[in-house]
Image 1 (cartoon, one colour):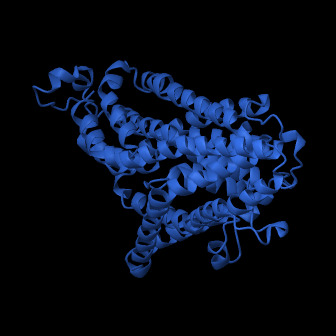
Image 2 (image 1 turned 90 degrees about the vertical axis):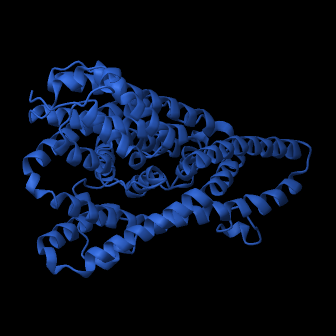
Image 3 (image 1 turned 60 degrees about the horizontal axis):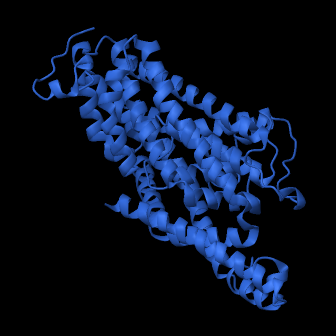
Length: 459
């Protein structure tokens, strides 16, 4: 219910934000056209002005302040959430060391599926970027000094990932890769120390829960109001030029996700197992619909695990390990949206993206997708992380980001559907590889399964 209410609020935010923003554009053009520019300046100073600019020392900028508070709260939770998520993920994985063979098979499938998603998204997004699909018509008339990325040796990124000050790493949002590396080091070292670590694991868990709670409040409570303000101010400040490329982003991303889910996933099952993907599609359809409607991978876990075991014929031991783990780190749909969204923002904001930059985006996406926490708005946090890590933070980038926040809810719902189906793909492929898949159950229709208990038959 909470998710559905939030979805409705976001939809209303989008509708109202577009309507009010277009209304202010009309008001601005009317007042200026009638010689009332001074009146418009008063309205602009009251609602939209950037109060940090030297020329706006007497301005109020209500919409600007609300939007900035929202963005700064996202930045506040960014580092602790990423750090604790990665450390906790490592600890979870290490606890399943006894299932070494199963883990290798599982991670192998996760990485193969992630590679497919990344190649698809990179080709689609980079092609759109190069063709100028996302570009704004009049952006060339605007001088963008903040959008220029200094050309440096790409290997410097490797050195920057290893900061010489742990506290400094955790106190800044400017080097997210260093935060990730520090989290990996802490997680591995803490796991090797095992029971000697009594305080740190509990502290990490509590910081993680605190970060999740703050994120929930920021996104669920404050998000719609802040997104409304960001959207209205963006339309008023930059006009409707952002709207068309933002809609193109949403359509392009949705089509890419559908190709991944309905073309590449079935093809992957056929190549890996030799089985027809039709039974899989028929039985996982309800899981995908449930994931789409709730927009929560965690909420689909019971239904997903039951479907994988009782309808697709995956052995209980395999399903009990692969499905929960996949729900945590198997995020192909997330990877697709992050790559295309980052390229969209880079294009709109005037940043150059070459092969080196694309590789950096891919690396940040891989790390982020694997460690994305199961929290409301985690996709928005991950995108903000990638944009910050790439240095895409000028005013146009933030404007494009605000549009994505406003229109991205349907895309996020589709992402969840793809992610939960992906988990089922991994479970079936791993079970087949380990000869723990009941082929009779896999091929039976869902209706016939309601009348009998499946018995495991080694393939």
